[in-house]
Length: 59
Image 1 (spheres, rainbow, N blue to C red):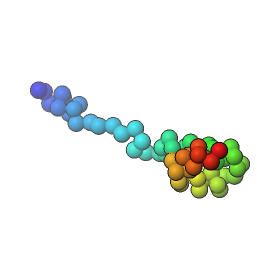
Image 2: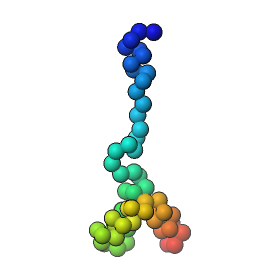
Image 3: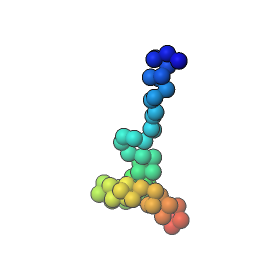
């Protein structure tokens, strides 16, 4: 195996390593759509999937 092939095999990628995750973005979108408040959207974004599941069960 050549040196170049070994180097290419050592890279791994993580889709959600940086930025916000899908659950956070979804929670923010749902919260802002319901409350029209940036503050509540940030708070609900912090809880991420917990808020999404709560919303799915409550509404």
